[in-house]
Structures are given as C-alpha cells and as structure tokens.
Image 1 (cartoon, rainbow, N blue to C red):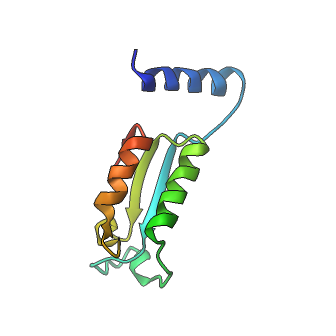
Image 2: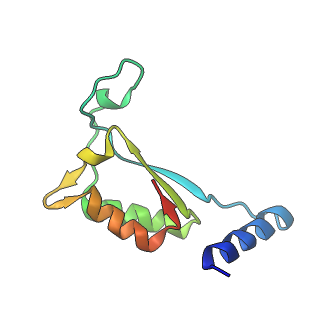
Length: 103
C-alpha cells in the first residue's frame, strides 16, 4: 500500500471518528505580481512585498507541519516569482519532496 493511501486513511479516521480536523489542501500565493491586468482580478493591483526563497521554503514547511499534503501555487502569476537565481522551478523541486500533489 502506498504511503499516501495510508496517510489519507489515517486522516479519514482522525477526522471522522476523533473529530480532529487538519487542513489537507492548501493554497499558497507565492506572488501578487502578474503580467495581465484582468478587470475581475484584484491581485495585480496589490503592492505587497514578495517572500524570498528561504521564506517560501519556511512557509512550505509550516504548511506541511500542520497537515497540508496537497498544495496549489496561486498568485498573480506564480511563474513570475523569482529571487536571485531561484525561480518557481526550485520551489517546485522542493515541494516534490514534501507534498503528495501540487499544482
């Protein structure tokens, strides 16, 4: 049996019978920057600072520690995020080791 099957079975038992709730799905807005200016989207209008690579990794670790196993990278446009020579690809390579699935 795969590890993730065991994990989800354990998650089901804990949440259903012990009423212990933890998040299993998490969305992470890695940047608000975007190369589009869609009328319906508020993200490109925000002028918030971006997290550095180490801060992103710390956030992924925190999400993993509270139970998140399925991760969604959101934004603005996540592919725009960059710090020095680190890009979203580096973050994805790290996430592969921590999460069952990510998008």
